[in-house]
Image 1 (cartoon, protein in one colour):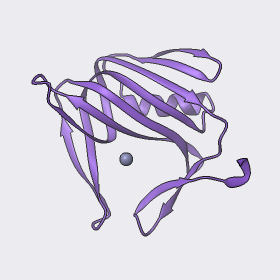
Image 2 (cartoon, helix red, strand yellow):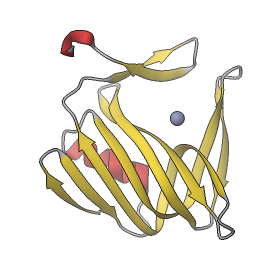
Image 3 (cartoon, rainbow, N blue to C red):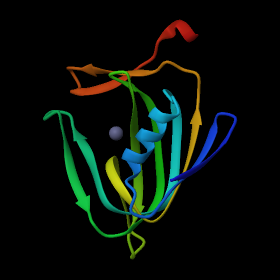
Image 4 (cartoon, rainbow, N blue to C red):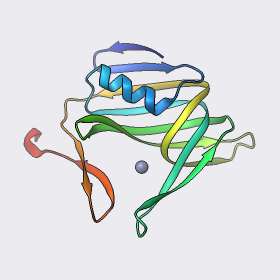
Length: 144
Ligand code: ZN
């Protein structure tokens, strides 16, 4: 993994065979990033994505071992239990140019992994909501 920082913007290049969520989470911890916007493109493999089933309060999960184009990763970073937590969704495409997507659990760079992270001075954090079954975003109004 390599990165360049300009102000509060980071361009992050994750190498082939490196895990994306794990690497970006570690990057945030090492750089003290608590709140940020995240985006990315590339080609990935060993991808686990999901869709949330609210009545069951669990994710329907699917894994894809093959290399897929990472058309778009869009996400954010907020603190969960005091640690930076990445919430990201992806749109992927196969060799027939057909797309699929979902909530990203983990993926590994298959060819290229190019990410852009913009840090902001917020204090957003995640707290478990029993009615939803997930740690949802909370915004402290003291910044308004
Ligand atoms: Zn999600």
